[in-house]
Image 1 (tube, rainbow, N blue to C red):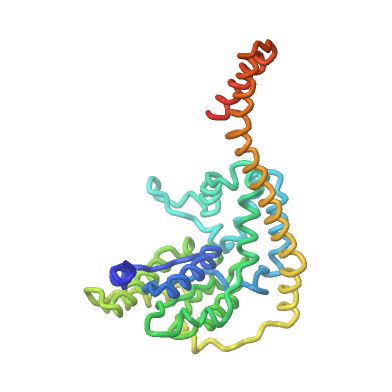
Image 2 (image 1 turned 45 degrees about the horizontal axis):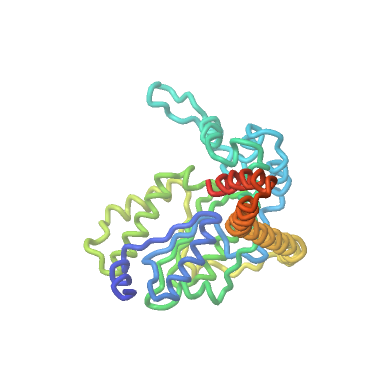
Length: 337
């Protein structure tokens, strides 16, 4: 059972989460730790521990509103790309395999990629339930300092790395640094100083190399066959230095307190705006589910019962009953289909 599963996953299970996925990864890892089957490693990318930190930088709020109010998918893509990527990356040129010279800008390529994603194909109203669910999940996320410390303390705690982006316009780097400090233990913080929220795309090779080294280190510490080649560590460290990625341990991160007005604003936004919306959506969702259950019960019980009553009336020679019976049978077939 669980003991066999724990032994099988002892060094094979690695959890990675980016942005909202990082918030989910925190809860998933805590659940695995409580079950006695902790992951070998945990990587949290451009994310935070929630609470008052739910607000993005104030300079990004008007841009987020503009994205939500965009009249077309093209406008929405054009407005959201600068929130996801650093301006220099969007204006950089990408090599084309069929040409000797770079002919495509990263921004134009990404615009085409975003057009294929479902939230950008039609009006945002068509995806409103998913958008609202995504936002509420992010805005109501919160993991306390005590719970986070379980990920960094103890002999079976996963090896944690937190990745921050110095020019992230959605989740400030100070929130990611605070997350690494709260986890504590041997948690490592990687700060890509010149990149945006999509650091995993902007610095794909360096990002993947750092994660691979992290996976192999954690697996080796748990008895996985094969040691980490020194050449791999040297190559990864050199590549991170080239892209100005700063590496720090949790113990080296200072406890810099945020401005009091920022904390108060975050809690005010959470309590006075997000919480009422959250409970309203839950109430509406509950009402919709109950209505659907009643309609389903009527379709399964009421329609056959009515058909049985009308069939009895038809056998008794009631002409109108036979007319209603035929329509009722058709309705029952349609519901069944």
